[in-house]
Length: 436
Image 1 (cartoon, helix red, strand yellow):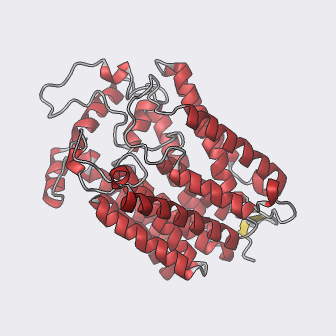
Image 2 (cartoon, helix red, strand yellow; image 1 turned 90 degrees about the vertical axis):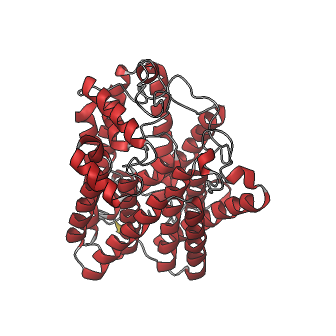
Image 3 (cartoon, one colour; image 1 turned 135 degrees about the vertical axis):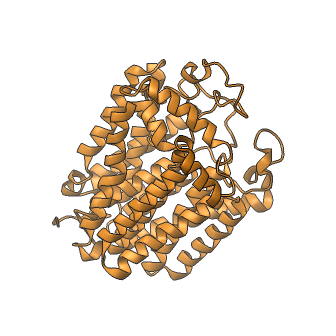
């Protein structure tokens, strides 16, 4: 339904942030931080806390300060009707399910601290969406943030490649030479830069032709050198589905196509672990049907979901805790999965943390309901480009979730960029974008 207020997205034209910074500039800074994180080029964390967290005082204080800045800016600069449309009720359910689950965690205090960091990061996500006074401001901030991140990453690749390329040492030696950029692993970096490429496409569509094209080109070069074949396949799928919807004028049909592809990806990944027939199909279609050993992780996850199907193990309450490491090693497996930091599968990890009922609620609110908002956005003609951007991010991350874990994962760039799309689609389906 159309509102009198505008988005992104809000109308904050009367007031600037402290020091003369406009809402669009502050949003650009926020997106830059969300993509880059506060600890870029840190590599794989040396240690994992008892709550499964690798955060330290930099993250804890840094994101708290940013949360206060963006929260204050939104209250000063954004129209109240727009703030009311942030779908806080749905987010309250998401965080409510996670908060209830903390009582199941072995380290409840650590679990709650992790959830608080996730909540603070969401304040920045909301600010990125609603602080710009119009779509051009949002597009400019997004493209400039993307260029800033790419400049830092390519600078590291040229002048300090040991920071941005997998080395031949350690457990990740098999990925030697693959680009990881400012993140801890190529499998995290590739999805992030596929999303940054989508910001470039969006910027190009909004008239920022050269800057948008440069963002897309640099991201594609990065993806090729990351060696992540799955992401290179998922990116054109997501872009193609949204482009097909825009070309045919039938968003509902394209949503059904996406759901069908989700079923196919699920069948060829986790489904292949459960069904011998699906495993044979996966082996026939994919060169590595184990997905670099993920099949053994998923078997381990499924066994433990079956042990606690209703309540789960609590938010960040399974991996990197005695709930996982305290099990006997499976000597028939090719490697020991008990010491991992995640299950490399968002949906199984959601069931491990929140139980099957909680995981169903999460998937509905974070991945199904936003598709309805995308369809609804078509009634608001000015919202097309923005809704397409967020739909592409949502679609590609739904596929990535089959191979990586990110749901409610604190300030992880995969999670916050996905959350940006979820919140953005809700707004795009209800609040008219201000285009000038």
